[in-house]
Amino acid sequence: MLVGVDLRRDSSRSSASDLLAENTAEESLDELAVLAESAGAEVVSKTLQRRDTAEAATLIGAGKVRELAGQAEALDANAILFDRDLTPTQLRNLEKAFPCKVLDRTQLILDIFARRARTREGQLQVELAQLNYLLPRLTGRGTSMSRLGGGIGTRGPGETQLETDRRRINRRIKRIEEQLETVRSHRSVQRRQRQAVPLATVALVGYTNAGKSTLFNRLTSAEVLADAKMFATLDPTVRQLQLPSRRRTLLSDTVGFISNLPATLVKAFRATLEEVTEASLLLHLVDASSPRAAQQTAQVMQVLREIGAQETPRILVLTKLDALEPGADTGTLAARILADAGTGDFRPKSVCVSARTGQNLDRLVALIDEMLPVDRTTAARFRFSNTEGAPRHLLHEYARVIDETWHDAHCEVTAEVPASVLERLRAYLL
Image (cartoon, rainbow, N blue to C red; front, side):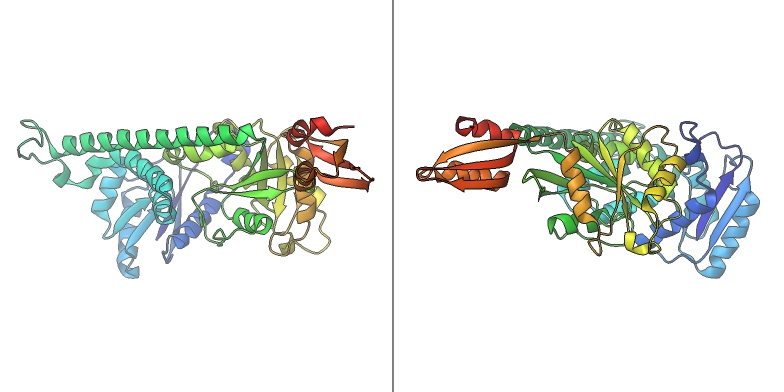
């Protein structure tokens, strides 16, 4: 059973973006339903309550609690999902009132993340987010968490089980943060090694289920799981992509964003989100067929601001072109989405593609090549001795050869060459 609350005087709404405040309770509840189905649940009912303010004890009020408790018994529901974060007091009171498990939005998202994390890093990040969420809510777990206990070396005289649990969780949090800091250090080393040989990173960002993994697979021939479920892929994947100029770049597939993304997750996934902050270019994917494209665009841009990536050059990529009406004006659509998203004067270059059919992917790759700031290409002419095969092979491998003329003892080659290759072949320049 899903329960949403539309608070008319909602002090938690951010004034930073008017559009985000317009993300209605109905849309949020629909999104919660998709999240629940992604977690393997079957939604049997949706309830939306409108009230001026939240009820401190139960969020929805005693009368509504009794009504939903009877409905849960009638439907034989085994979980009630609230589309808001519950305070420890609300969680404890609702668990007493309902005949089944009570979860809020953050707990549901954490559960999905826990199911989808495959790498050791991803599992650590999820565990950290879960512990940070659990710590202030230990008192909501019943009297078993606060009874006195004894035992050699377990706790001091009169120390409660609750205090012991808190101390143990704090130790575990500190240990995970140290392990994630080690991961961060390793990423920094790998990043410096990549920067030694100019190889820019292009990061895919976007709302969850915008088609990032499908596009990633299409561009790189990778086999990342592409599924309509939210957060189908959680762990970031990096593959090499060759551009028309023969430059090579790294394409990074990242975790999808979502409205009301828990702050604990943003903090826990800092190491992963660094791939976004360190990227030379962002591909901001937006589902062009979604009626909520503008709201989703605004939400992604909000997260990019929060992680400090708002100044990174980006391309707006409208996906799922095959789902639009034939002949749709994609340029006007992109402009309308940006205007409705409240981006002001910010107008990135845009392209509309279909990762499923491959339509316009060549235009996207050409635009990436045009906007990538690292290892710019310049036209140059070289002369190689006929006995020097290695430098000529390097040119054919990493540059776009325009003309090649053979003479008796040498050959002359005209090519568009990345700066890093030009530096290595400077001795052969004409």
